[in-house]
Structure formats: structure tokens, C-alpha cells
Image 1 (cartoon, rainbow, N blue to C red):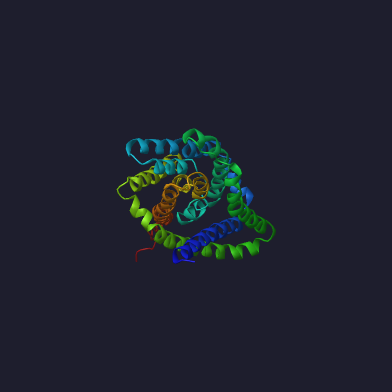
Image 2 (cartoon, rainbow, N blue to C red; image 1 turned 90 degrees about the vertical axis):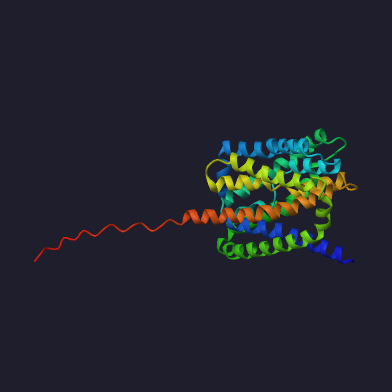
Length: 301
């Protein structure tokens, strides 16, 4: 085994463990009614779906009109634009001090729609592409839904145990995401350098920032909600994108482009989430109420 293969295995393992521990931690911290309650806001759900499955693909189309990319990079951007429901979303929202229950509900909703949406839309956008919904669904179900369901089950049957282990899972998920970011950046540094001069990096930056703004605007005025929709729209479902690109474009630069996009999303959105969290925390700290002036009633002697 070469050093590159070793670190690639570390990156894959840390990515898997991050998703599993993150979903377990979220499940242990929430209940099903808590997750479903925000999704009862039909208007908000529709706007989130429009943002992720209409406006983001439209944004990608506009970017490709403005920035001339070679075909494999164009393909990668289109695949990313059609993949929503990222497992990283709850962790980002946790850092942003947003509505965690809404984040988990939105993540599951977007993930389910992605499984249906990608096989229908991609063949129209990319000629010669065949997408098997089950190939996308099975990895997401095993990595995300099963751990989330186990966490929710533990929470419902033994709340004290869940409350004890939830912080442990959250700390582990933070450790694994840091490992993934460092190792992933090291492994993809050559791919990042190769994209310099192609317009690929600029296209990805515009795509991530533009997607974040779309989600932020459509999320309304409540910071706890629009931070979720902003981060959830910008953080694409890289797992689903990798499944599609590995099956259909393994001999091109498309997969490398998607991997670079995954690293850039983390490098941009994690600090953004922490900044949003600091702002939310600061807004919650109210100045102490002014003490009313004493009104003495003493008698003069």
C-alpha cells in the first residue's frame, strides 16, 4: 500500500465515521415530532425545494454561460447542482446556532427528493447518463438514515442514555470532520492546482456563494431558519454526486472536480457557519436592564 492509498483510506474512513457519528448524535438529541414540526410549514418547505432543485441548477447553468469550462468540469457542476441533502448540514447548522431539528428534517427531505430527482433530470441535462436510484439510495440510507433512526430509537426508549452519549458523538464527529478536511485537502492539492487557470475554481466559488445567498434569501427573516436554508442549499450532497460520477464519468476529470468541490464547500461553509453562530450568540446577549433611579422619600430635618 502506497502512502497515497493509505491517506485515501483514512479520508474515506473519517468521512464515513463523521457521517455515522453525526447522525447518531443528532438522533440522540432530537425526537421525531421535533424533526417533523418545522416541516409542517408548507411555504418554507416549498421554498427550500425550489431553491435546491430549481434555482441552484439554474445558477449552475448561468455560471456555465459566463465561464467557459471543458466538458468534464461542466458535467461535475451540473451533477453537484442536482444533488441536495448533505449529511454535513446538521453539523454546519450546529456551528451556526441554527434550528437543528429543522436542519435534520430538511436534510432528510432533500435527500429523499434527490434520490428521485437525479435519475429523472440528469439524463435530460447530460446525454448518455444512466442513473440507478437504488445505487444512490442505498449508501445514503446506510450512512445517514439508519444511524439517525438508531439515535432516535435510543432517545425514545432511554432518554438519559441518549443525553449521555449525544455529546460524545458530537465530539467524535468534530474530530472526524477535522481529519477529513486536513487529509482531503492534502490529497486533492494537486487537483486544486490543476484547476487553476481552467476557470473551475472560480466557477465553484461562484456556485457555493450563489447557492448560499439563494437559500438565505428564500429562508425568510428568522435567522435560525434562514441560516439552515442558506447552508443547506450551498452544501450539496457530495455522496450522491460521487456515486453518479464514479458510475458514469470514471475516465474523466469529473470525479476529481467533485472532490475538489467537496473540500471547497467545507473550507468556505464551516467558517461561515461559525461566524453565523457567533453573530447569533451575540444577538442573544442583551445588555442588563437599566436600574430605575431611586426616589428617596426621606424627611428633611
